[in-house]
Length: 191
Image (tube, rainbow, N blue to C red):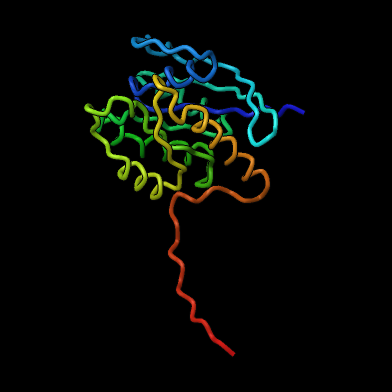
Protein backbone atom coordinates (compact mmCIF):
# COMPACT_ATOMS: atom_id res chain seq x y z
CA UNK A 1 0.00 0.00 0.00
CA UNK A 2 1.32 3.44 -0.94
CA UNK A 3 1.63 5.83 1.99
CA UNK A 4 1.18 9.54 1.43
CA UNK A 5 3.56 11.88 3.25
CA UNK A 6 3.19 15.67 3.33
CA UNK A 7 6.48 17.55 3.23
CA UNK A 8 6.86 21.33 3.43
CA UNK A 9 9.95 23.11 2.08
CA UNK A 10 10.71 26.33 3.99
CA UNK A 11 13.50 28.90 3.81
CA UNK A 12 14.41 32.35 2.62
CA UNK A 13 13.78 33.45 -0.94
CA UNK A 14 16.53 32.53 -3.40
CA UNK A 15 17.99 29.56 -1.48
CA UNK A 16 16.89 27.00 -4.07
CA UNK A 17 13.68 25.55 -2.59
CA UNK A 18 11.96 25.50 -5.97
CA UNK A 19 15.08 24.19 -7.72
CA UNK A 20 15.33 21.28 -5.26
CA UNK A 21 11.64 20.47 -5.53
CA UNK A 22 11.43 20.70 -9.34
CA UNK A 23 14.61 18.66 -9.69
CA UNK A 24 13.15 15.91 -7.49
CA UNK A 25 9.59 15.92 -8.82
CA UNK A 26 10.17 16.66 -12.52
CA UNK A 27 13.94 16.21 -12.96
CA UNK A 28 14.04 19.80 -14.20
CA UNK A 29 16.74 22.31 -13.39
CA UNK A 30 16.76 25.84 -14.70
CA UNK A 31 19.56 28.19 -13.74
CA UNK A 32 17.18 31.12 -13.38
CA UNK A 33 13.91 29.90 -11.92
CA UNK A 34 11.29 32.48 -11.05
CA UNK A 35 10.47 32.70 -7.34
CA UNK A 36 7.51 30.63 -6.15
CA UNK A 37 4.37 32.69 -6.48
CA UNK A 38 2.88 31.82 -3.12
CA UNK A 39 3.00 28.07 -2.90
CA UNK A 40 3.37 25.27 -5.41
CA UNK A 41 2.50 21.66 -4.78
CA UNK A 42 4.16 18.64 -6.36
CA UNK A 43 3.70 14.88 -6.10
CA UNK A 44 6.45 12.32 -6.44
CA UNK A 45 6.30 8.52 -6.22
CA UNK A 46 9.30 7.14 -4.36
CA UNK A 47 10.50 3.84 -2.95
CA UNK A 48 12.15 4.47 0.40
CA UNK A 49 13.70 1.55 2.26
CA UNK A 50 11.62 -0.84 0.14
CA UNK A 51 8.30 0.90 0.86
CA UNK A 52 6.27 2.84 -1.73
CA UNK A 53 5.43 6.46 -0.88
CA UNK A 54 3.62 9.33 -2.50
CA UNK A 55 5.46 12.48 -1.50
CA UNK A 56 3.23 15.54 -1.48
CA UNK A 57 5.70 18.41 -1.47
CA UNK A 58 4.64 21.97 -0.75
CA UNK A 59 7.20 24.43 -2.12
CA UNK A 60 6.63 27.67 -0.23
CA UNK A 61 7.55 31.23 -1.09
CA UNK A 62 10.34 32.61 1.07
CA UNK A 63 9.56 36.28 0.64
CA UNK A 64 8.54 38.27 3.71
CA UNK A 65 5.10 39.12 2.34
CA UNK A 66 4.10 35.45 2.74
CA UNK A 67 4.97 35.05 6.42
CA UNK A 68 1.28 35.20 7.40
CA UNK A 69 0.60 32.09 5.29
CA UNK A 70 3.50 30.15 6.75
CA UNK A 71 1.55 28.99 9.82
CA UNK A 72 -1.06 27.41 7.55
CA UNK A 73 1.61 25.64 5.51
CA UNK A 74 3.25 24.32 8.67
CA UNK A 75 -0.05 23.04 10.09
CA UNK A 76 -0.55 20.95 6.94
CA UNK A 77 2.91 19.37 6.94
CA UNK A 78 4.16 16.18 8.56
CA UNK A 79 7.84 16.79 7.87
CA UNK A 80 9.88 19.84 6.96
CA UNK A 81 12.95 20.75 4.97
CA UNK A 82 14.40 24.08 6.05
CA UNK A 83 16.68 25.19 3.25
CA UNK A 84 19.46 27.76 3.29
CA UNK A 85 22.04 28.56 0.65
CA UNK A 86 25.65 27.73 1.43
CA UNK A 87 26.45 30.87 -0.59
CA UNK A 88 24.40 33.14 1.71
CA UNK A 89 25.26 33.65 5.35
CA UNK A 90 22.09 35.76 5.74
CA UNK A 91 19.85 32.83 4.71
CA UNK A 92 21.68 30.60 7.20
CA UNK A 93 21.24 33.18 9.97
CA UNK A 94 17.45 33.09 9.46
CA UNK A 95 17.12 29.29 9.78
CA UNK A 96 16.37 29.46 13.51
CA UNK A 97 13.28 31.60 12.91
CA UNK A 98 11.84 28.94 10.60
CA UNK A 99 12.68 26.14 13.04
CA UNK A 100 11.12 27.96 15.99
CA UNK A 101 8.02 28.76 13.94
CA UNK A 102 7.59 25.05 13.08
CA UNK A 103 7.90 24.11 16.77
CA UNK A 104 5.44 26.82 17.79
CA UNK A 105 2.78 26.00 15.20
CA UNK A 106 3.09 22.24 15.73
CA UNK A 107 3.29 22.79 19.50
CA UNK A 108 6.15 20.32 19.66
CA UNK A 109 9.93 20.37 19.62
CA UNK A 110 10.10 16.86 18.15
CA UNK A 111 8.78 17.61 14.67
CA UNK A 112 10.65 15.90 11.80
CA UNK A 113 12.90 18.63 10.36
CA UNK A 114 15.85 18.34 7.99
CA UNK A 115 18.20 21.30 7.72
CA UNK A 116 19.35 21.49 4.09
CA UNK A 117 22.39 23.47 2.96
CA UNK A 118 21.86 23.92 -0.78
CA UNK A 119 24.10 25.08 -3.66
CA UNK A 120 27.23 23.16 -2.66
CA UNK A 121 28.20 23.06 -6.35
CA UNK A 122 29.11 26.77 -6.05
CA UNK A 123 32.31 26.03 -4.15
CA UNK A 124 34.00 29.39 -4.68
CA UNK A 125 30.96 31.32 -3.45
CA UNK A 126 30.56 29.40 -0.20
CA UNK A 127 29.86 31.53 2.88
CA UNK A 128 28.62 28.79 5.25
CA UNK A 129 30.90 25.88 6.06
CA UNK A 130 29.57 22.35 6.52
CA UNK A 131 30.54 22.29 10.20
CA UNK A 132 28.40 25.39 10.86
CA UNK A 133 25.37 23.63 9.38
CA UNK A 134 26.10 20.50 11.42
CA UNK A 135 26.45 22.50 14.63
CA UNK A 136 23.22 24.42 14.05
CA UNK A 137 21.29 21.26 13.19
CA UNK A 138 22.52 19.57 16.34
CA UNK A 139 21.55 22.58 18.46
CA UNK A 140 18.09 22.78 16.85
CA UNK A 141 17.44 19.03 16.98
CA UNK A 142 17.30 18.62 13.20
CA UNK A 143 18.82 16.19 10.77
CA UNK A 144 21.36 17.79 8.41
CA UNK A 145 22.42 17.35 4.82
CA UNK A 146 24.06 19.45 2.11
CA UNK A 147 22.71 19.32 -1.45
CA UNK A 148 22.98 20.64 -4.96
CA UNK A 149 19.86 20.86 -7.09
CA UNK A 150 22.10 21.44 -10.10
CA UNK A 151 24.22 18.30 -9.73
CA UNK A 152 21.60 16.24 -7.80
CA UNK A 153 24.05 15.60 -4.93
CA UNK A 154 22.02 14.32 -1.95
CA UNK A 155 18.82 15.53 -3.64
CA UNK A 156 16.65 12.49 -2.98
CA UNK A 157 18.33 11.77 0.33
CA UNK A 158 17.26 15.15 1.75
CA UNK A 159 13.59 14.34 1.18
CA UNK A 160 13.99 10.67 2.15
CA UNK A 161 15.56 11.69 5.49
CA UNK A 162 12.39 13.63 6.31
CA UNK A 163 10.22 10.62 5.43
CA UNK A 164 12.35 8.33 7.61
CA UNK A 165 11.99 10.78 10.51
CA UNK A 166 8.21 10.83 10.05
CA UNK A 167 8.10 7.04 10.04
CA UNK A 168 10.31 6.85 13.14
CA UNK A 169 7.97 9.26 14.91
CA UNK A 170 4.91 7.18 13.95
CA UNK A 171 6.68 4.15 15.34
CA UNK A 172 7.09 5.87 18.69
CA UNK A 173 10.69 6.92 18.34
CA UNK A 174 10.43 10.68 17.96
CA UNK A 175 13.10 12.87 16.47
CA UNK A 176 15.53 14.63 18.77
CA UNK A 177 14.02 17.50 20.74
CA UNK A 178 15.09 21.07 20.00
CA UNK A 179 16.69 21.51 23.42
CA UNK A 180 18.53 18.46 24.54
CA UNK A 181 19.10 17.84 28.20
CA UNK A 182 22.57 16.85 29.22
CA UNK A 183 22.81 13.34 30.55
CA UNK A 184 24.26 12.71 33.96
CA UNK A 185 27.27 10.50 33.92
CA UNK A 186 26.60 7.21 35.60
CA UNK A 187 29.13 5.33 37.62
CA UNK A 188 29.77 1.72 36.83
CA UNK A 189 29.94 -0.84 39.60
CA UNK A 190 31.57 -4.17 38.93
CA UNK A 191 30.45 -6.98 41.18
